[in-house]
Image 1 (cartoon, rainbow, N blue to C red):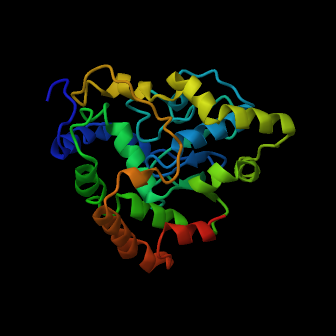
Image 2 (image 1 turned 135 degrees about the horizontal axis):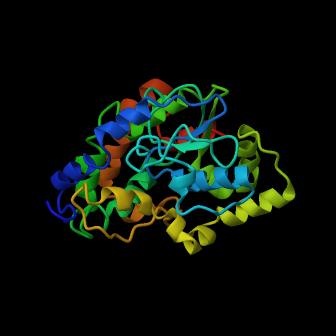
Image 3 (image 1 turned 135 degrees about the vertical axis):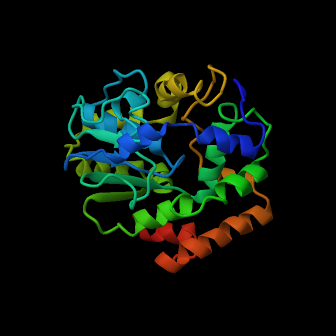
Length: 295
C-alpha cells in the first residue's frame, strides 16, 4: 500500500500494526511514573480526549496554550515516535499522561483515571474515527469491522479484558473509575471527584472554566487542538496513508448512538462476549449492571 487507506479489514490490520514503532512501545513500557503522576487510561473511544481536557483544565485553570492535547497530556506508547519526552516536567502538577493499556500492562507507580463506556457506543465511535483516516470512507462496513476487528481481539487486548482489569481495581485508592454515561448526565457532581483525585482545589470560577472548556461546543470550536494531528503528521507516511486526513477526536458525545448501527445478531454477539469475559470475573450480566455499581 502506498498512500492508500484500508479498503478491507486485512489492510486495516496491517496499517494498525504500523501505528507506532516497536521502539516507541518499548520506550513507553519502560516509563516509570512519579507517585504524583496521573495516567488517564480509558479504552479507545471511551472518553479519553474529553478526560484529558477536563484534567488539563483543572490543573492549569483552563490554559489552552497547546497545539494539540497530546502535546500537554502525552500518550505514553506514542511519545517516542512523536518526539515527546515522558520524563520532562509539565506546565502543572500533577503531570498528566494518556494510555489505553489495561491495568496489568500499564506502567506502575502512579495514579490512574479510567473512564468506562458502553461497549456498543465505544465500537461505533471507533468505527467513525477510523473511517476516512485509516479506512477509505465507506469502504469497510460496520458489521465487518465489528466482527473481524473488535470482536476478534483476545486478552490481553480488547475492550472486555481492559474493562475487567480496571474494574477489579475499583477499591484501589490510586485508581479513579468513572462512567462516561454518568459524566454526561451528572457532570456537576462528577467533576469534584476528579478535582479531589487530582489534588486540585475546586472553586466556583474553576468549575465554570472547566464546564465551558470541556463542553462539546467549545471542543468542536477548537477542534484543531483535539484532532490528533500530531499523530497523523508523524505517522501517516509510516502507515502508508495519505499525508492529510480530516479527523477529529471530538465526536457527537452521545450515548445510545449504537442503535442505528447494530443488527440484532451483532448485539447478541457483543452481549455473549460480555457474558464470556466479564460476568465470570465481576458477576455483572451487562453494562447496565456495571452502571449501578460504579458511582
